Image 1: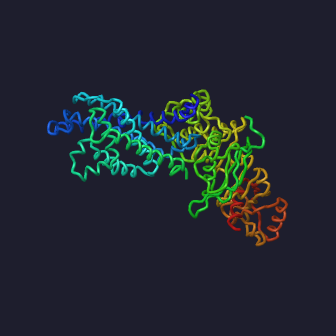
Image 2: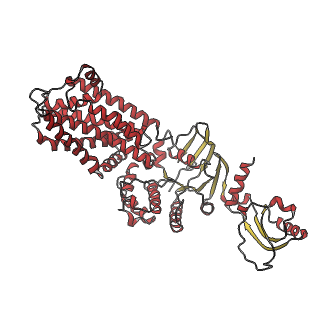
Image 3: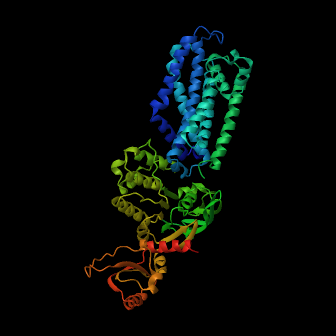
Length: 259
Length: 322
């Protein structure tokens, strides 16, 4: 118990709470708006493609699309939270109030990534509750739904932290989001099964870790997926480990924080 | 507040900081004793903020070491930072929160969960009590400056560094701030101050270090620094010219303030105002005799004692002309 208290210290809890408050105070922008965007995607794509595509046996296109859209929102919002919080604090200079404190680099990491996960999962849950009425969704393996949502949000929260450390202006964060995160999420099988792609693009998709996050998450709903669940789980764990090691090393070295 | 004897509030030894080819700090060593009110002076670019940033852990030294209350700022950073409160020079704030939220969060970062009694005391002392629930964005510049000071104090640090805390602050607020900071010093907190208002440093600081080009050029008690340049300036309004023998003592326009007295004697005559450097008051008699013998007439005379500004200007001038 005391070991847990040492790790989950008051300082870490406070930084985590501050990060939660930061996005919650502007929740229309950080929670409601992404949900609305995803619902619009659903309405348009479902209207156009429902009945024209049969991806998994017995699963309609709208039902197929909903988990993909939820995971896409989880990933994008987890990334946005840590990256935007960090770049805002760096540009406005108020990050100094955290850098002056006795918080260790790993506490900084845990607080920022955990808050990003919460934002991603809140948006994802809100979207699930909003869209569940649009199709006959199944929940074959709820545990895997949770596991992949948690892993995906942790990975993107960590990548957002790395981007926030690297960037020195808002422009660079926007570039990271638009040229890396957005294409990777759109090309991860959110709107289609990668099995329907030509061989080359199928191979490219298999190199995209976002694909495994979406595929594993969707497996939790329907019990079927493009690749084995174990492969998706393994690749997510490896991706999280690599991203976390990079982020922790950057934080420990004071990269672009302590000159 | 009690401190272990022998442990310095701040100790830096042979501190060097290089940014590429530029050396911001060039072997700075100094020691600030517990309970001191210590001044850190120097022109822009002297290295004051770099030195403070290294002590605060915001910048990493190229070589040398720094410690706060005996805790190395790198190896024992948690204890060093817990012992230190820093008021940054820049007017930075988090626009998402109210003053009270900011202070509660800042307390939490230092591991303090229930700190509202002390927060209320700080708010009262800094005249912020009625702004506690106001968002930071809605505060004036002076109020934001007070919040910066409050943030540095939430964890009751034994050592407080104020980096130009009164820059751009009106006279009334400046007085309030100094009253509060002085009372903290009387309670035993060590205060380190950087300021461009030298009269503030002269009034408040018991000891002063002067930096130039990343080096300490003077480190002494304020009174000793003032004594080091005993004497002052002799301000004269002359009818006639200054004897050539006194020309080497003549000070520039910056050191020649207007005479505070007014004289109606001989208003129509052409006059010259000069300031002469006095290293010893005994020289004054000889100076006046030389002017009389030269044939010039003294219309007005005023003696200005040495202040910290004179010491500062002379030290900086000495360093510029090795």
